[in-house]
Image (cartoon, rainbow, N blue to C red; front, side, top):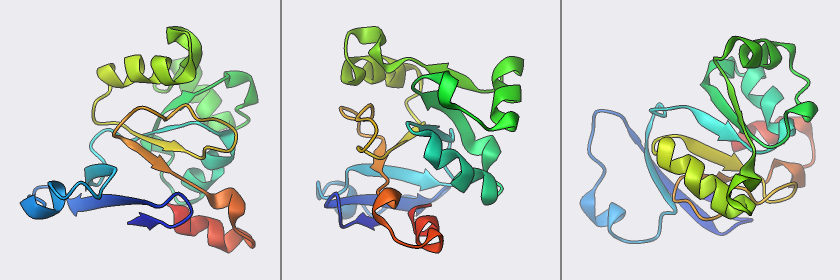
Length: 146
């Protein structure tokens, strides 16, 4: 998977298989992870939430990294209240990068989806996929980012 805007590449491979060693060791992939994702995703922007919900992947949203006052999804707010969804303040470690580095130590398999527009909370991890959907034109193009 490639993000030409961020000039990043991500190696996604079928779970239960082994990715080619030469590809993993090539150094050209920012993220190497099996799919389906082993521990869901952490989102850094509320605009990412509806894309997952519309695709029926709400249960894969495990964490929101940011201020929960901006979450408007009733279903995620219910999950937050029931404890099946977490919110993490990225500034816990003194900066967003330090905070997320601390958080990712507890969630080594969780992929962070960061847009680098509203936040750069995902910087500093090898599990961050950059989503640039905000640079797309029609809404249909946004689904390409999932």
